[in-house]
Image (cartoon, rainbow, N blue to C red):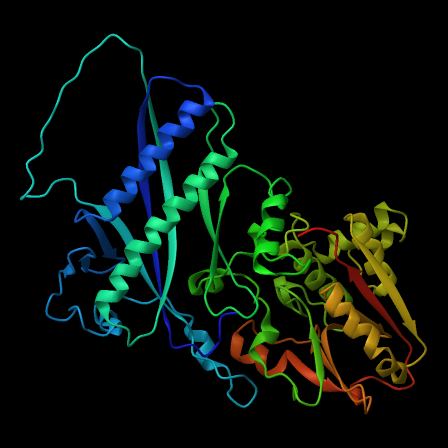
Length: 464
């Protein structure tokens, strides 16, 4: 995953490139051949003096092949690439800087520099020759806009000249990958628009970009994802579904709910504990959100919303996260509850969560424990759950419910810690407050030793 304290700069290059061609034949083979030639022409153009990058919301223009720019004295061949920060605004999540240092890992919010790509239409030193050719053959003019979206990481001290070569190479490489996508998914005269998606992977400190064809479902694309998993040595958990795309800082700021908040708090001692945590991302749901005063009764509903968000952001479902009333109505519809539960403040538990998940085509196991003192004995099973399934767990005990995101377990001593996402949190949805008060590794004493608990363990569907 991308390090939270990285000082690297992320340059994101976006823009639409026109892929145009004139076809004498309109069969699939002719279309593919023509597209291949047209992309080669585009790559040549990217590698020419006509290729320009423009700093979004700035007055900066760059000509990577000639090293020219509108700031020639500052951006020279051997300048540090951080020099560009004087001339372009950065995309950054400043809210992360406010997270209390005593409760969080070291955080240096990622700086994103957004660049648009352009082409010069004419150059003063080039004389264009126009040739008019006429015959009676019928032709079809083909045009497709390729949505380029390239991510290039750079150390702030890297030389500016070297980085500009990387820009050209990265855009050229993405065009080649887009051609492969078009060749693979073109059927007859139906040509898909290739789209770039950026993903985080374990043990990788940069983003991995995958090209998918627009309009083709994630289910249809599973063979391509399986090929990527084999190539990159990944397991059987999903990483490349569209819903798992990396959230850039501006994306994060636009989210209604905070995502994957546990990644900002320190892990227990890795020398002492074997640590197993939830896989992928989820959104944090807790008391008083959405203008609903559910303090004292809605914690299990909130835990369920977090669990459903996990399935949504891992791409297993595409339905919206249900409200309390919608959850209650679902229980009525399947005959689990009487109609008077709708709109009430009635508490629900692990068995109701399993029932709701079943109605959504998902499954869950319920583990019943006689007392909180038994939860430590289940640590091995919980660790296996997070390693194999990777889903959040709801722990229900009268009258409270908690969302469990991971366990840290010492096999020799039996000591265990639990990563708790607190559905009872009533504060604002800001990073500083949530990391300080909403999520924490808790000791075994957190559980009431005499209280029975039911654990709802959602099961991850098959497939990547």
